[in-house]
Each structure stands twice: as structure tokens, then as C-alpha cells.
Length: 151
Image (cartoon, rainbow, N blue to C red; front, side):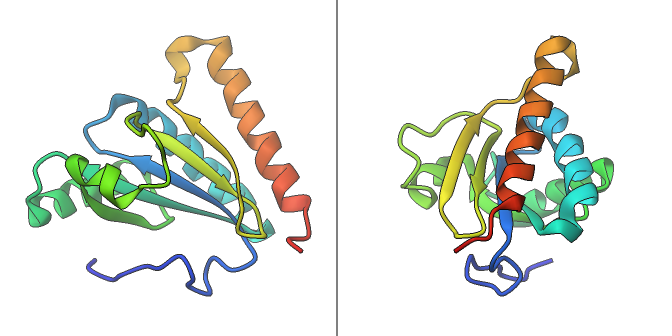
């Protein structure tokens, strides 16, 4: 919607944050997003925030914004989905992520603002038990982070 969001917004302070690096063109991102939305819906009141940084291919901001809106609507996303730029911009905009190139990538940040884990890729339902295991591991991590005081 054209509004800027900053890491130091009060909205994120003292919260557990999952930053999802995503793209509307990415099949695995279409698998990860409903899972993150479900997690957000269940754990938001406990202090979980999710924010998606969408990197798109075209570089045409208006077209890309439209694609991100369609993607968010399709998956019922209620957390912020931000158009972060084009896929070519990602390494420059995320210099802390060495050798970045996998979509989706999830960054798990504790209440203290420190990165606790980075997970690349997402195992969707076609992977069967691996998907179930990954989802359980992510939820356990998030619950552990939520239980921390953040000091």
C-alpha cells in the first residue's frame, strides 16, 4: 500500500519476529506462506510477528505491487507483506546474508532482536513426513523464543 516499514517500528519491539524472504514466483513460497499465516494467527497474541519481504523479477514496481497483493489475498495473509525490490536487489538489500540465493528463506529473531536461526527453503506437503517434521521444528523454535523474556 506504499507505506514504509522499519525494523525499529514499535510494532516489532520486544516481539519474536519471523522475516520471510519470499517471491510470488516461487513455488515453495506458496507452500510456506499458508503455514506462516496459520502460525501467525495462532501465536500473534503471544508476541509473534511475521513480515514478508517479497523480491520480484520484473522491477516494475506497480506490476510487482499488484502481484504481491494477489499473492497475499490468495493465501489470506494478515501480516505485513512488503515489496522489497527485484530479485537482483536482494543481495544488496540483505548484505548480512552471505551467499543468499534460496527462496524462501526464513530468519527467526528473538525478543532481544538477535537472529536465532536462518532456514532456507521449505518442504511442502509433497515431501510428506519431512514437511510435518519441519513444521513441528519451526513451531517448537517459535514457542521457545516466545517463552524467553527478551532481556
